View 1 (tube, helix red, strand yellow):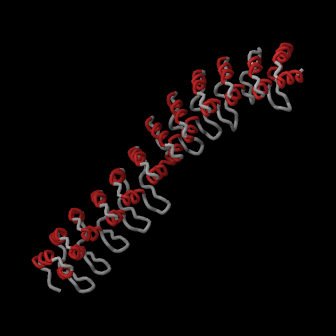
View 2 (view 1 turned 45 degrees about the vertical axis):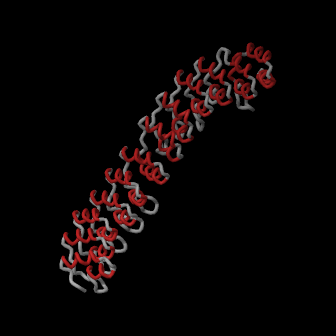
View 3 (view 1 turned 90 degrees about the vertical axis):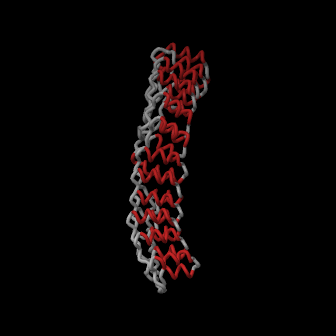
Amino acid sequence: MTDRLFAAIESGNLTLLKDTIAQQPELVNTVFDEQEATPFELALKYGFSSLAEVLIEVDGFDINHSGHNPLRLAIDLGFLNIANSLLNKGANPNYRPKQLSSALLLCLDNEYFELAELMVEKGAEVNIRNDKGWTPLIWASMKGRVKAVEFLLKHGAAVDVCNNDGWNAVTGAHFKQRLEVVDKLLAKGAVFSSKFSEAALLSAYQHGYLDLVKALITSGVTVNVEDDKGNSLLVLVVRNGDLDIASLLIDAGADVNTLSEHGNPVLSVALSSNHYEIAEKLLSAGASVNRANNNGWTPLMAAAYDGKTGLVKLAIAKGAALDVVTSDKFSSLMLASQEGHLAVVQAIVEAGANVNLKNKHGKRARRIAYDNGYHDVKDYLIERGCLKS
């Protein structure tokens, strides 16, 4: 009789199918050995939906046949009317075979949202996890499937569930650069999983996603993260002159004495990059005022050379050493004199700098100013007791 049933299904003979099942209704759940499939499976695979509809009406039809799930197959092959019928007959919407996605995820993958609504109504769990711990939301987020994400969020999907590798939906969306999805998840209160939050912060900055960077910092992510060259995020931000983000990082506890890949203090990086507002922020936050860069220049020297009077005064107020010299024995006063920055010269002298130090050429600040044509500086230094060299 099984041969007769198989022949009916293979040929699409509805009359023969009905007659065979009427005689032996228990065959409705048989599994054909060679095909390893049930009559329902074969009917759908052959495309004979009318036969499948007859089979599901037979008394005793196993609507949740283990290993041969009718609902999942109907969704997979796109027979949505049959899937509807199965759900209304009590099919388990949470059937999840090993190594395969859930019926709900399959439904969302094909954008069968009307059917997905019915599945949820019938008890489909929106947070169902597969063998790797992926929920439909993690899958949809990483794939950038915005409509599926919206559907799941509408139905209360948990935004912070992690897969077996520790990824949650927003982490996956970020690393796949699904920014629209990231925004939607953050708006629902998602946070980056702790395992990946620091990497997410660094990656977001490197890719220019500044709004995301700000959101991560304000969410409390640890900010002292480094790139593969050893540059902290603060160094990268300072080098680029991103004042707003630098301020956020500093306020969030970033190390203001961190070093660049070349061993230069971040304050020196700010000064050498001409980002003076950031330099002021760093000084105000406690950056070491006397730590020299690789060339032996202190922050005061750099500010004096560049003629940044306000920064010079701030450095002095923070305890900058006035008479430290470079390898050429140039002091901050000499550097300011060389460049003709009278206001800076005045600030340094009034703070108590030694006006009579000599560089390696035996020249004092007065002579340096004179040689460079800055007579106003020279005259001021004479008034302050700088000897002729």
